[in-house]
Length: 220
Ligand code: SAH
Image 1: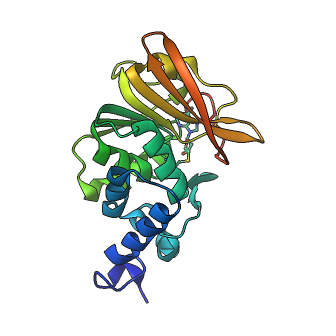
Image 2: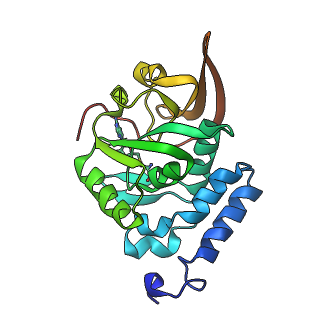
């Protein structure tokens, strides 16, 4: 069966399949209904190769080329919920566009969203994946996320989809007051950390152990 051609409501890529993914996320402890609604609305299967489309709503990472992966739905939800903390977001930044899936979800949660990718060919792929969705408030940038995006800062939320060994100072500095950075940190062993900017500096808390591709310096 060609899953992409299946009528809505029946195929492995249907709205109903997406609703089931969201129900699993909710059962798994994701409580941010805005994040869940955004994930119910973005067609994740449109961000992976056709051969993998039928697996797009499983809670698993999938290859997107260039040795990179689209993150597991649970991890996307967890990271966005942690960065949002129940607030309406003005400007938000993603580092590591990859195939563009998380950027599309982020754009549903922020007035203005930006996403940076270091590999030029992946940035192009994301652009092509996103074009049919016509998301007017999302800007993609080919660049090095270690620098952040000073020209668009400050951000109410920054989410990082690749793991550096240490938290890049530029990303902390580009947070607005009350802004939050969700970032996997580490090498072999990584954990998801959340930083919040307050008048007095930054507070930090640590969430789950995670497994992300490494964050690399410079444009590819
Ligand atoms: N958010 C993506 C997941 C992409 S995987 C999704 O929804 O599919 C992480 C991505 O981070 C890879 O594409 C990798 O090339 C990118 N990356 C790694 N280091 C980076 C850096 N310094 N700046 C920008 N992107 C980077």
